[in-house]
Length: 323
Image 1: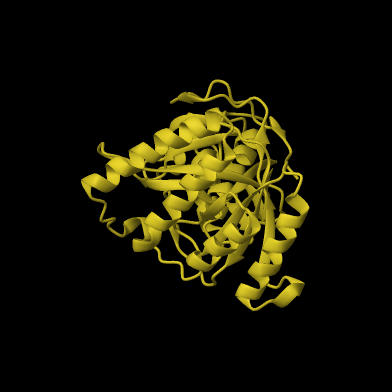
Image 2: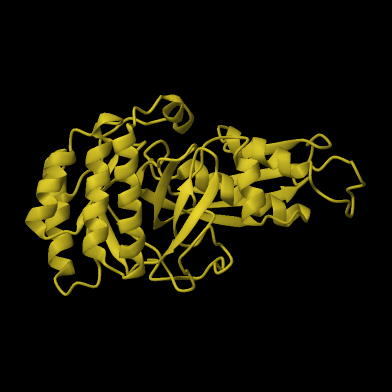
């Protein structure tokens, strides 16, 4: 078995001045994918054949086959012999919304198949495998990280933040990550310098646990993304955020989701989250009953420490405040 969390879009996404500088900063939330792999579990499965359930999880199937090719010899598996089985992927993360559903599927699959077949799956190996499939979020790291999603490599571990809630809406439809990343991004040199400055500010904000600054940067990133993936509800959501005293807005930069960030440790949290949910429901046509609105809880990681290019301090499963 393997698991991976999703994200609510990104706190920041853009491009830096250097070559290959496309990057994002993750916003981990307590929504999960679980994968299980049972070697040769179904009667009638051909030798070496891998079956995936549900059948449309084609990327997970491709990854499972890649890992099976790396498997060492073992009981019933001679050197070079087939390593078939049944891969089952179960997720509560909506697909095509900018919530890292595909990345979570792949990371959970890597962990499950690797454990079943005796193939070590450290982050660097997972990155190399995923880079052959699609652009990927940094959900394999239990922390808020800056991640080069196109080249699939860690840039820096920023650390962890106190618990937040995200009152989110979905504008509808879906976005294919691979197709979106094929679209040329018209970033100017000034844009790239601006994103570099925002990343520096966000790094400091996470280090100092400054949620207000995190919200300001996330809002700025959402506004800058309008020329790439326009969201008609962004201005109304920003207005609701101001009315309820939220920290800022976060979006799925390559998706269809928008959300209001709230400090879950604020004494006025219950009042603020209720007011935000009601206002968002009215915006989406759901009325006070809350149609079309979901509340997400961010993840906090007790052992996450910041540092450029570092993953040594990350311990899988070191999570607190996760639900």
